[in-house]
Length: 290
Image (cartoon, rainbow, N blue to C red):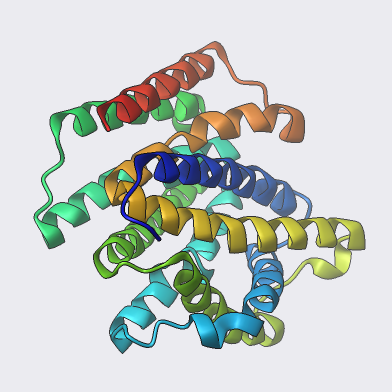
């Protein structure tokens, strides 16, 4: 972790967005295939926990107050956030996940940073974030207007996940949490608490799922979101700040809509294509402002 560097932060944020896009689309694919949200979270922490366990003692941030360690474990991209996201995907589409999970994240971070740190966003950040959110809403507009109670429940899960994650993003910036420390604080406590709970008490659809599918989801969720994206996410927060990182993550709805074409067979409508273009324009404005 060197002095804040825009290029390093931007590359980390773009890598994070690519993995999060797969997190949304492949998570939806697994749930449609019969797995429960808890199954996918369990597969993630089986792999991510095993990768982190050998080095967790060396990487554990002993200098941080216990309450900060607990907050990072609970509010980071761990079990709570993943359960909320996958529960939303069990109710509605991947496009909605991108729009309301990642699209609402810049607003949650902006409000929390203003309330806790007194950080007033600049005009360029407000404008670019607004453009990205408008494009994100266009991507998910058809599903929003045509949906019912299930869609409303899914949206509530996604927004709740954004609020939880925004707390972690602000903490990473304030407490200067390194990627290695983030891996230890998020993966190990979540694996130790969630995996026994899932095995003994939570519903599972793994018995009806093929071993090849299980292995594919375990490798992607464990190595991708559970390990690589968590490091990239922390690096981006450190070098860019929570607000810009959250704004860049709002590109996920457009990318998820594109990835859903070959993976889920969901073809974007003309309105969704317009939204994708607007999201890309908003990202360009944000990067230029920085």
